[in-house]
Amino acid sequence: MTNRAITGQENINENAATPMGALVEFYRAFNSGDLELMANNWDQTDEASMSNPLGDVKRGWASICEIYQKIFIGSAKVYVEFYDYSIHSTGDMFVAVGRERGHFQQGNTVLELAIRTSRTYQMKNGRWLQIHHHGSIDDPKLLNLYQSQVLRK
Image 1 (cartoon, one colour):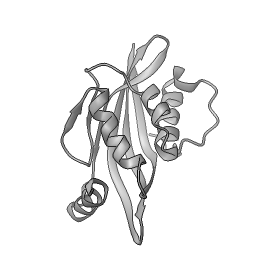
Image 2 (cartoon, rainbow, N blue to C red; image 1 turned 135 degrees about the vertical axis):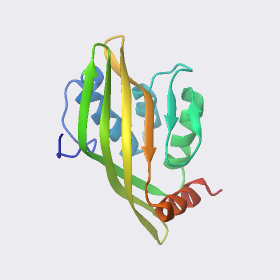
Image 3 (cartoon, rainbow, N blue to C red; image 1 turned 45 degrees about the horizontal axis):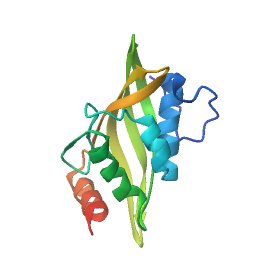
């Protein structure tokens, strides 16, 4: 179990060649709203899947990308960091299991986020690519507020 948070600001030279590098790359992409870097972190096949607090199961990068676009584009600012986590690896796969904390801000609305998170990566062509993400918000009121803010048009 590791208590040191991953924010995306860490200096990692390995990029996505190591599990830690892949996780740092993900949080760097997320917290900077960098859709191109996010795409580099994910497997680009239809096998990729995501079950996140915004609801539904998304399959394939095209569907997953739509969720990140909703988060990155617009006036909302979302920041999360990964903490209280463990990394479980075997051969060409690893799973990172832990928690995310952070905040969502849009106008005068500020939500403190608390998310249970797991990320699964597979080694392909010398780098780790994310093939699955699952995130859950336990607090029903916070979940409803987060969904209504991010998904509103």
